[in-house]
Image (cartoon, rainbow, N blue to C red; front, side, top):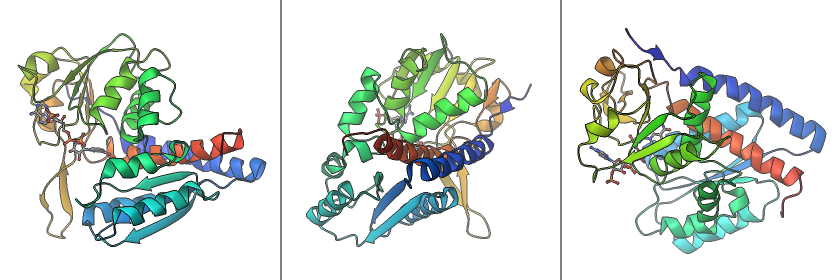
Length: 297
Ligand code: NAP
């Protein structure tokens, strides 16, 4: 039987409606307009699209946004100055520096420079550490989107065996962490796989919930999953272009064959993807709310 399709795009739309109401409430009751600054260094076409989508989302939800595009040869010192300026700007509650950065700039130094209370991507070591010990206020956007997708699809994680494939700092490690936290965390038993894992299929076959973030099309095939598994495909791989020049996207999971065995699965596109920017908006509102309830800023 074909799997239930988990429609991230619809869930994302629903959450955005909730965020728009929260934004209005913050404006009406506290006189605060949440503000997001995005900094784009260079001309990477993919990054330009992402930054544009973030700006558009802000404008639709009533969030103030400031976008700074600077040339690829901007010095690290100038970028750090810009970050510091936004750290002290009361109109700005969230700062996002679009990655990847040009090679001459040390991305960690830039991330470390962002005031943790404004780190809406949740990449700063302070926020990563808080996530790890279960005291985080911000959650990284894509992993938080996955948690929300499961929650709103009535798929419990408690007591489940969650297998994560991929150990990036952006997806694999944080989602594994969020899944193993006690409630309101996932409270799941977690296995984290990577290229050093011997016999990957032996682990993926044990998964009740399989989360795949490797960046390789068809990395997971039907013989690697058990009947009734829930599959979250985070991968976004560009495998060509349509006649109109639009990118053709596919995930990391062989959707056609895996959906025959799975109980539920996220499609690509339209699964996890739309959740990421939505959760960024949520973090920006959360950052602004932090000010409202008297954070140190
Ligand atoms: P990444 O930094 O490239 O990390 C990939 C991870 O997968 C690494 O830990 C790597 O292991 C592991 N891996 C690669 N091939 C593997 C294999 N055959 N078996 C087991 N593990 C393997 O990737 P990422 O940033 O997490 O992104 C992963 C995918 O998700 C990409 O397609 C990306 O575009 C997509 N993504 C989507 C969203 C969204 O909003 N939907 C957000 C972020 C990323 P090693 O550590 O051992 O090298």
